[in-house]
Amino acid sequence: MKSTNFALQIAGIIFFLVAILHLLRIITKVPILVSGWLIPIWVNWMGFVVTGLLSVWFWWISRHKKDESAFYLKDRNRYI
Image (cartoon, rainbow, N blue to C red; front, top):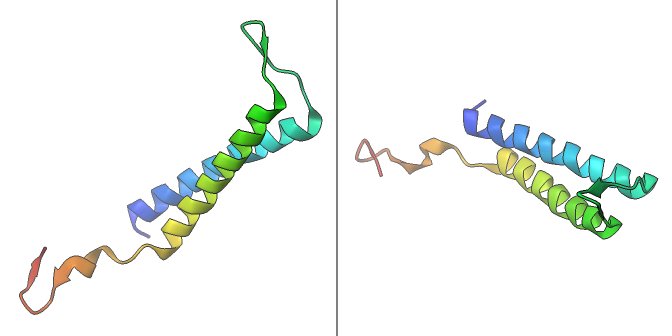
């Protein structure tokens, strides 16, 4: 496994876990106060959508990333 694919998969997993935490707050409706300001639930909806999409995107990229040696010109024996 290439290190870039591994890093993308780890990032995808982290974003997935954050999306799950956003969803958990949406379901339980736990109030969160930051400096006396109540964080509305719509913020978690936005966070859930964004982190969920990033998770899927990073995981998809890690699975469909082309081989890094594709830029190697076999007929001229050099990289471009």
